[in-house]
Amino acid sequence: MKKAISYLAAFLISIVHLIPFYILINLALKTRQDTNSIWIPPDYLYIENFTNVWTQSHLGLALLNDLIITVCTVALVIFVGVFAAYPLARFPTRWNNAIYTLSVATLIVPALTVLVPLYKLVVDLRGISTYWAMVLVLTTFFLPTVIFLYTGFIRTIPRELDEAALIDGCNRYETFFRIIFPLLKPVTASVIIIIMLGVWNDYRFSLFLLQKRSVQTAPLVLSQFFSQFQNDLPLAAAGSLLSLIPMALLYLFLQKYFVSGLAEGAVKG
Image (tube, rainbow, N blue to C red; front, top):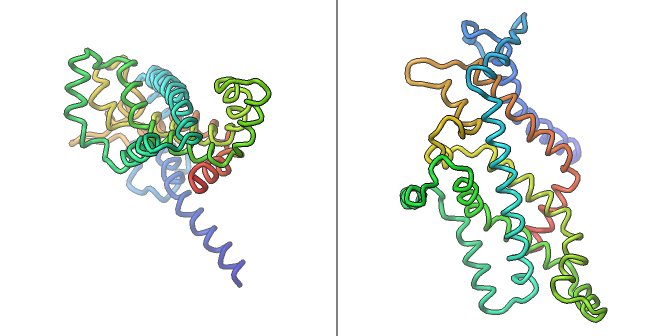
């Protein structure tokens, strides 16, 4: 009985998550005049929505901008996060514990509460509509999450590995790169998925910091299909489908590491 209830619950949860995708695909294959019902599938396939949204919104350039910002942010946040997490996990001094607690505490602060001073700072640094400013801002706001996951995961690695490496003549840097870092593959996969999804879909900071059309990302260009007077749902749906393909492929490639890395890094930490 319990097994049947579990299967039923899993089925219902799956249906709830699949409904938005059904609606999205349904709208993407319809004409603009045939959007009165989001549930009834069309008896035709209007593929022109995909070509139209690609040309009208310059979606290719937007996806390229998204890719540049996402890759740079993920690389930087992993580089900084893993080097910050290792001493926090291995040397639990009062100072390190205070830094870790402060870092984790920032997770409860809504990012938009600092938007005004952040925008003023970026303006003063002449970083509006630049890649580097967007990368630094996103790195700053995702860094606490990365430190939390890496610190928790490193704490599950036995200290005896570090001691054995030190006895064999390795210094701290060699111990980290030769012994610890190769063991971080599961949590690194989790970090890549979480951060890439957050950066790829970011709208809150992009709306204010990426004002030039040439550097705008996919969420920004797709939002132009929604206005006060008219909406073009089929084009927006087609653009959304095209923009989710890279992240879907990434998740399929890294999914075997995702659950184990997230569980060991967060729960055990």
